[in-house]
Figure 1 (cartoon, helix red, strand yellow):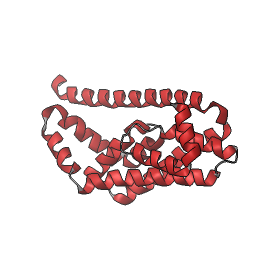
Figure 2: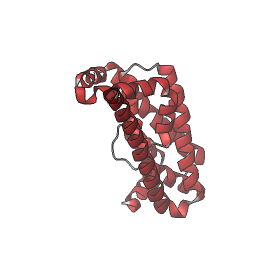
Figure 3: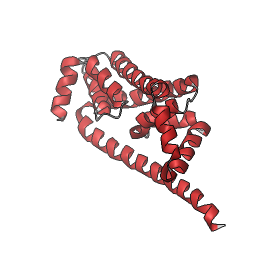
Figure 4: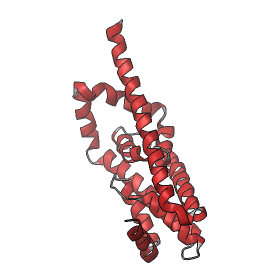
Length: 199
């Protein structure tokens, strides 16, 4: 699979890298981080231009995030959010997630661009559905995606011969961090839900 992805990056270059980062913003299983590292590796050998790899990945990611935000804001995700809030089983957790996004919205968006990236597409929808101010979303998104692209393209540029092993390691670390963060948030929400019954 990795050989096929590298062949795609070699054959289609910036187009496939941009498309991968864009589609990953819709929670589609795209190995966008691996493709950015491959782009960095090809830039190190002179087959691609480094700044163009960064620009292509960055533009694709930002367009994907903004599309998710605006689709949620304008085309019905707000109705889904309202429906979920009416359900007893999810209402409290969703309210706390909304409060978290409102209080720490910028940081939540920034960190889910690169450190907790599996949550990124869902935060985009949540931000749009709850009508988070667009300028605030945009600023955090631009900074977060810049971090994501810079980290992965640079890793590919520096460690080009080991990108498969590096990608696996980073994927495991990010997955563990994301799972840990979700567990902490759910634990905190359940604890707060339990407190009124204890008193």
